[in-house]
Length: 173
Picture 1 (cartoon, rainbow, N blue to C red):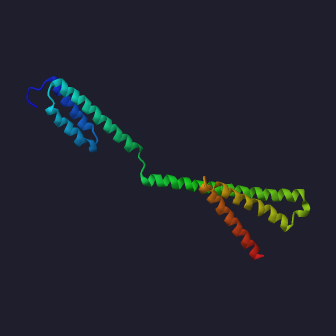
Picture 2: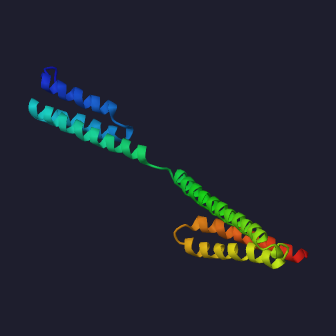
Picture 3: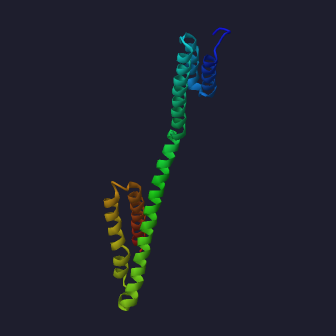
């Protein structure tokens, strides 16, 4: 541009230079090209409108890039979220299964109070402690497997540990 630049063309150049300075790194080459093209726009009003349109396009593109940067999740972060959710589900399954085992022990105590003759019977123990929780573990695992896999895995793991414990207990007798 020559030394006799009008105020409108000066404003247009200033506007595009400001947009160039504010633009993110990946947009600067595009903003610089728009600033250079300003030299080839004929007419001061046309140059000013070119600068307004170019600045708006640069700002829209920059805002889109900034939004994408703010909302993107890294693969590691997404994997950690998934892993955390699965770990929470397994923990929830284990806690639920252990609560069921606690309820089974409570049932055993209640049976001992209501029927004192069954208090020392090994059958009452096996029926109260083994059958209901293991049946509930199997049913819960089957029902939850598709939609709540980690919870089902926690329940299944607790059921298997409990079955292993009973097996070891029977083998020791």
